[in-house]
Length: 347
Image: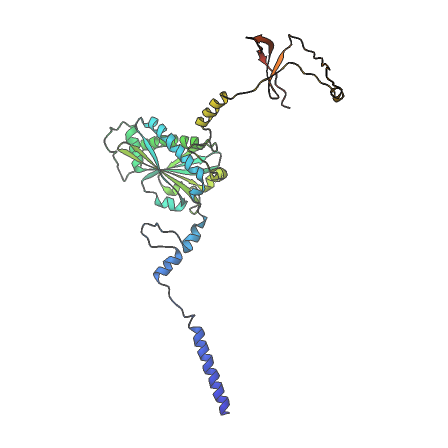
């Protein structure tokens, strides 16, 4: 019995040691703040320049990078050039338009980041049956009002904060929005014809909600300078709006222009005018059977139903070009072109 008791105590001791060994790796450990931030994807950088990781990377994985739509840069490049001309005519002032950046952002985050006061113009893409947003900041609003109402150059636009915009200010900004939307439609024309129609003008971002807050959107920031005045225009187009032309925006383009290239067309036309063509003068044609051709011998004669006054066909390969009369000039056989040859039926 004593041996059995000793053996049982040894087993109990062995089981306790095994339990302690297996329990030690599963000891609960509290994560520190750095590990929590890394898991959630917050890098702690004040400028937010760090790459997203962890849960934030999963959340933002649905975001579409604008760099995957190469034709957007070409479209906005064209928009900047056209706006420089149209706004110069609209304001009768020296206007410089520049594209600051194109980024991808969630619609809800963008609405929360709009600096107020501002005017939000909602427009609709008729052919795509969806909406976009054009935001005019306060500096641009007061600059446009000052320029269109005859403000003197060299003086900064007066800004009166803390009051709603007047009817005159809204009407002047609306006129500028119409000019910008017309240029935007023209910028998309070589890619896909679309009409951007002005829908309404809002001053409260909550009333300018056109898609769900979590939807991805493309944001283009434009800077407009009119000597010592100016401001910013921000064009926000949801990716749902661009979906009908996504395949066109995905295509790669080499060069600074798209659509028709006048330089290449002029060069091609000038080279075509210098091309040498061989023309054959066909005096007559006849149809013979293969048996008659096999019976030919030296001295055989072929009778052609042609007279000296018969018309001569001028051909380029198998294509008839002209018809004329056979003659002689300066000791050489010549053909005088009299009319265009009838073209064969394409069917």
